Image (cartoon, rainbow over all chains, first blue to last red; front, side, top):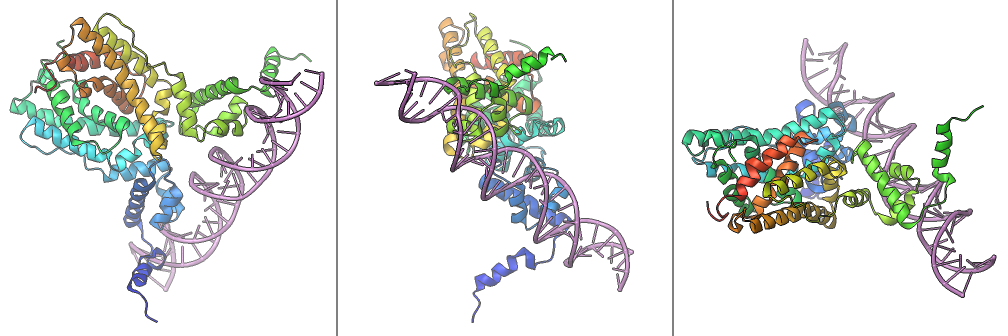
Length: 211
Length: 211
DNA sequence: GTTATAAGAAACGTAGCGTTCTCTAGGAGG
DNA sequence: CCTCCTAGAGAACGCTACGTTTCTTATAAC
């Protein structure tokens, strides 16, 4: 009796036949399982039990690391997002802005977007968690834009006096607004409009203190 | 043995001692209970069972009207928000804008804000529900702003050519952005900054098609 | 080899879900 | 007044998932 090649491969993939993973390897497997479940069923229908099954881990192993679903998902999502380092320098304000906003749109189309509402909602009941979610949401807005305008100022494209926190927030705010009101994917045309009709003209205005 | 006045009042409030409510009266009681629970425990921790208890109704009565928690909460929240009618006419673009944004900030500080993330998250799994949530979120942005700029154009404060959907969305987007990144209440100074530094200058720019 | 402990599996008690069933209050109509 | 219909209240059900505990043992370190 010949054994099909597929069956052999399947047996190899059965985690119960393989050694136990420990530490970082297990953590990675769990976080990967979270992302896969998030993509398949969304945040609301994601369950810790299903994640554990999918990761071939015991629930106790998950609860040893994360006290609740929201924290598990936060770690998985924040772990997979790119570092909030400097956006690419394209040589122009417009180029930098478009690159950054396209990256943000891509994030909203992925696990971060999937989890956005649910994480916010689940985190609201606890001040520490809410603080963490908000700080993260703020961070992704601020760091990129601050670097982009720093460069634009250095290039002489923008006057420092035109800058204000409200103005710097506008690009991210409009992307998230589109996400909430129309879902994903965010069309590139919308991104271009946000840059060309809103953010760039704003940053080219006279000082924010003038009206 | 004297019975405290509070106890007597409590007995009167015991719904099991009062006639059954029917139809609209029951519906109102249920929706009121939702709003109270939302305010006390937020969306994530709100349960249909607790709402039913609080309303002095049976779960079956709730499920006869609403198939799930998200729809129950959507109805309660949308029911209590003001009609999306015309914002007050203050005589100036700035006045109208500030009035509208203050109203939106107030909404975000109430049940609508409490439910925002959770409803979005729960609705994402079902295309019809997602559509409804998104349409509502869009509606609250569009109607007010369209009326405000129509008046501003009529007053000669704004040139039609300056208008674009992206620009009209900016106020609402920034308020929601503040909600997500810093919570509520939204300080009035922030509202004023959004109007004076962002929305009004944007609407006073040359045509959106120009860059 | 020994030791310590993290990992996997199973089981537990609980809460809430969504549903069903029974009884009856309440309204409509005659 | 009566009759009829059904919505409403309360209770119970089976199920899922939660968060926790217990037991066994694989695994790493020494």
